Length: 191
Image (cartoon, rainbow, N blue to C red; front, side, top):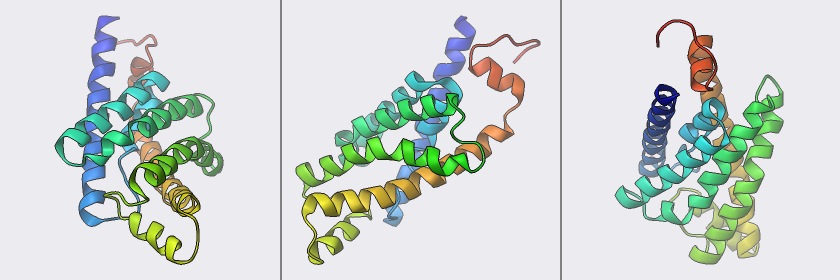
């Protein structure tokens, strides 16, 4: 029991580091996607909703205190993404063509929250490259909330689809024994 818990906490910490790396690369390159949820989705898929939510919260805290203060405001989005990923992976929403639907279901709740945060707290301008798209929609005559939501749904869906694809590729590399151990099942032999 104790060994499994230490392993789960270690994997969660690794997932937080993975989020930091992806988020930092996207921030530096001013990409319209964030790449800061790969670890959160991986933690949710491997360890379940609570660890996924914890990875999302931990990533926002670490990133917020080290490189991007805006990440602190978007902490609820990370938690929602991790929780949803854990639930959706348990329901096999990311197998084959269901990944397109699963990604949409994963994206919408977090997008509603992140668009609201972006619009109401920051006027649609954050440190992400997608802020340029929000301003473009504003100049085309859309309201701030409509602009923020339209951009968020597009960029979040693309970001989550890329992230889910990466997570599925990573998970396919793990042995059945390792997956079983991470989920707290019986394992024969040493790990």
